[in-house]
Image 1 (tube, rainbow, N blue to C red):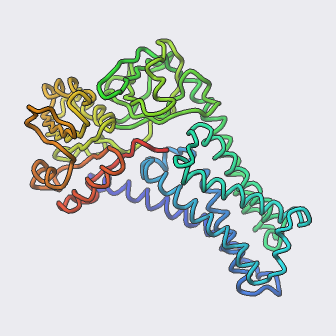
Image 2 (tube, one colour; image 1 turned 90 degrees about the vertical axis):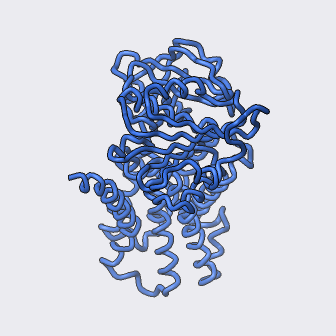
Length: 445
């Protein structure tokens, strides 16, 4: 039974990959049911195939970003968002190559770029491609272009709907392949799925959030320019979650406005009467957290994430490696373990700028009374009388502290991307099993 429980997440993840591949390739599989229109060469057919695959991949982006719990639970939000980014680029390249092959194979088709004289289906394709280009450019270089998150998210959705909607219109307008019944049915179904996911994300999910509101209980200042936002459920039993998970927070406005931000819970999963979020002041929204008044209305969409010790009940212990505000999900896991009287050993390696910047420093010391907890602070700017570790969390430091039997523990890493990459490489070099290493980026967007 234990082996079955350990294999089931892998089997579920593999099944979703199979569903994705089958869905992406389904337009080509349906095309095999009928012969291609006469008089069309290989390159033309190849171009059309690339366009169909790219369009199907774009439709599925709506599913990847809809936060469907069964999918998210199989991989975790980090992997899904990375997959979303990479497949969007692949879909963009496939869709871009589609007309390029047409133009090279038949230069007369370049006339379709004459926007004002081209047929409507060609104009739809041009606008869809421009929208997709803007979507990709603004997503990859958002920070370099200094585009704030909230307006970017709105325009990201507009570009996506435009690209997919006009892409489907173009496919039906050309009609060489979609005039037959089953081919048309498939793409109508694709369009319906995309529309439903859009309605679900923009209308259904916000409505569900309004049925479970929260009120701000207090905002507590912490070390390291961090604030603990305490929420109390209003008229319901609260959010049941696994330690280390996160939720999307909407504060003081309606969830229908789609201005939400992801934050990890810092509180114990055993205490649902209040939820605590550790929020570092790093941007427009987070810098205003300190000014939020008690009684402010809040909404949550969650919980999400697989970054939790709750999935590894048979582990001999845990190694947690945090940097800065990456301590937040670790606090949730440690507090929960303390409330559950977990007797397994915990090792926390926590990198901070200075002694005064160690967020939850006093709370961590208190947890030593409840847990078999060892804390190793690593300071970049240590005081003169500091006797502990300094600098950065590197391979030599990890080798001094992690267990000799590497596979006996599960390792959780949450920090800035550069630190996470360094720690991941170091653990690999120290022969830590790859399936025992779990990572969570605190900058999801």
